[in-house]
Length: 115
Length: 118
Image (tube, rainbow over all chains, first blue to last red; front, side, top):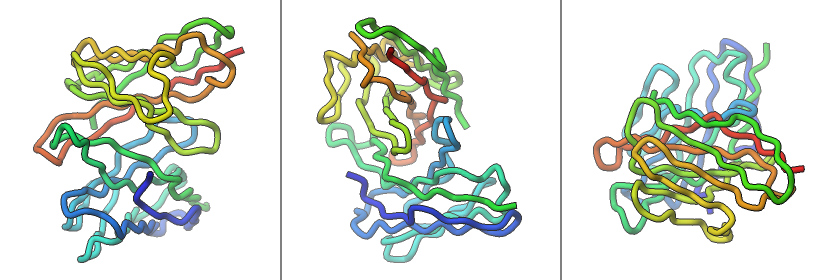
């Protein structure tokens, strides 16, 4: 079962920042938060991941609260091509291999970027 | 990021036939690959986890005799849908785990294969 809660849909204006929230109140101390997005009829695309510190890369920023119970993905200047379903995933560790994991997808947030 | 390919991208087959889908990690070695299935307007559902050189681990409710997974090399995993039926029509997506520091591995996804069983 997915361990995250996301709003089903959001929209933002092109050029503005898109802030996508995610609740993961039952996250364990060694579980990472991953963000992926899926553009229609394509495979998911990796965006960013983090453990406890805020992270930034060329695509987005990830802000994780101090208690780690929630996070926010920030797309600083959304474009029309950012319209997609965004998935926030808590990594589940496989019991028999400590360093491995599997990603369980929830229903995600459908982001619509308006012209 | 790392590249994962799938072949074919789209396949149509008759009911009762078997279909093989290939998943390749193009620029990295993947000791672990994953197979997902996605029905229209639904999220991805993990079907199985495969490790190179060993048997796949299937998620609850996924028939291992119907969905045969082979991970014979560090860059190739195959999913064979045996005796396909119309209800198997779906979008099948593979992913591969790129190694790194423990806990830092990233999973990359292929473009998906759309299967239509007539």
